Image (cartoon, rainbow, N blue to C red; front, top):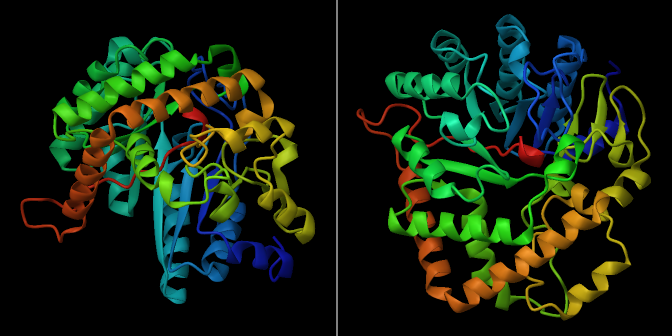
Length: 398
């Protein structure tokens, strides 16, 4: 890799989080996979490429703490020795630069047994497990529900906190209280939920606005009833955005508050292609390539306009929910009119719901703040060393 590439170094100054797409290969073939991963895919990131990513981020980022997110495909198809060497290299760079470096890993969990989990945890890797509910629900779109159930037991036994990413799909959207109860029983304190997106195989499995709305309300009711026994980062953010909605200029819609990929995140694939986020391999969102000079004006234009809205957005100026709207995944909104319309209608329904129940939004936010403050307290001897998981949401519902 080229060292001292000035345009790349300037780009990475603004980056705090890189989704490293270690491979597009996966041992599963989930029905809604937004990257269309299969066991037959054969891309794999070299260790040299991974080290160059770490060097660019750690040496140039203006942020005191940076994230090297091990992502895929299924990143655990990469050997532990590869991960160990990469983590040691990046951590040493962080010490040289006086920066913290964290290593979340997003996995389907089927290649992670107790021994491997402990070994990677000891390296400093944290885990985000894809889980759509108890095994009989999880396996409707995925595989390995029984394996993940065992993994939760091993994590409790070893006092290793894991984060969970749940994809809300046609098979669990009307069963979310059951999903959250299952996670509570497994000792999972928090989750990030994503709706199926209009990319890859997910395009054929989109949810209606009513399905999204009913699932969210059911989750809110569970969170309130159980004093936030399992919190959902997406819903907590939604409640906060509602409470803040009247403090801005109502004539100026706010775009994609839940997506900050255009701010400080990028995705980099095994070939060194740099994308606006880790949730796409679409060349329309390509920023450049490692080892090559980049078009800084073109990159800035793409990041400033991400996502690129069509003329349809003019209606947003008259929408009362415009300061509350996240528009779902920006890339899927760009690719699919149905996805965009469903999220538009869902957002309006949620705006009406919170408008009729403002105390629920306030209570959700207050409980979320209390829980965050509790997590930030120094651990005691009985807490273990990972009382609150690092929640890194995989893009696009993986």
